[in-house]
Amino acid sequence: MTKMNNAKFATKAVWAGEKDYLVHGATQVPVIPSVAFGYDDMDEWYEVAVGRKKGHIYGRNTNPTVQAFEDKVKVLERANAATSFSTGMAAISNTLYTFLRPGDRVVTIKDTYGGTNKIFTEFLPKLNIDVVFCETGDVEQIKKETAKGCTIVYLETPTNPTVKITDIRACAEAGKQVGALVVVDNTFATPVNQNPLTLGADLVLHSATKFLGGHADALGGVVVGLDESLIEAIYHYREINGATMDPWAAYLILRGMKTLELRVKRQAENAEKLATYLQTVEEVETVFYPGLIDHPNHEIAKAQMSGFGGMLSFAVAGGVDTVRHLLPKLAFANRAANLGAVETTVGPARTTSHVECTPQERAAMGIPEGLIRVSCGIEDGEDIIADFKQAFEAAQIEA
Image (cartoon, rainbow, N blue to C red):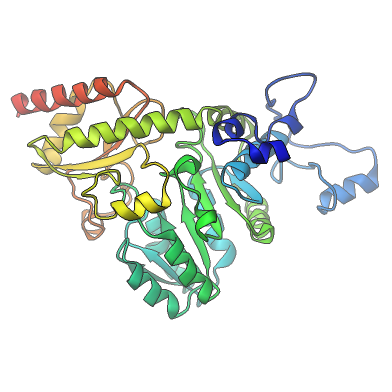
């Protein structure tokens, strides 16, 4: 374990959490689909069942392949404990429902992912839970609202899809002053570029479907933390409510994570190149990428991130009509509601991140109807730029 602690990130991505689960001389963690795990010794079975001894009894609770995935994320996020879920939204919802009760108060930002936003605007109010929305990145407003008292401070940084940045350390300090849990969705940044636990966050979430898996072929979610009791509480809620990760999905994501650093660094390079190019395009009104020096949160991003990630978005003149003409012209991009894959993926917020929201709700979050989200893949950066260039030219002719 000492050797693993001293290893660099890329080495941890390959080796962390795996050796304990190798069997029969295999060099890869096996997929173990068994629903149940048997015991001849009744006392040992009981000790495992009540959590006093390591082991597995039933697939809804734990599974060896799934645990290997959890252990790897735990190491990469510098956490002490982790638990997984069937999807990213399951990770978010289960975490919130574990700790919130009627009469509680949540302080969050306006620019959360559409599904998260629906929990805040539709589901929690039905439980008499008050949700306060602050301007994303406005630390003073977040501090002010947090000081009034709250149970959870919930952040997403960078945000989906306009990649806004919020100062995690400052918000974590504010949360601790009132005894609030600070929860950070780290999906866009990944552990390669940001470790919120080292900045004071209590819990860190990922949609493992995205960058962690990296190949758009498996759904999953995960939450990690330093305080094992917090993760145990979330695990208990999940094991009873049943949003369990499938072992085959765990295997696919575990395999994808071995190349996490390689992929994310290449994706970030491509995103910065594409964002710089898009700033020169006449039809583009605004480019959102924290790596650009004119991004309003660029300095905060530099301070708390080690890279700016593979996500960007841009707004085009002509709105939805321009989007309709432009996106079908791209040769090297999937037009789909996903991100973080090895292939470049594009789509407007109105059909991807915030499809659940009305045009008015999107506008209130600063998301234009003509906004296009881009998840840069690992293709050659020059080819990505050339593809967008020809698409703009073709769309202009068609229009």
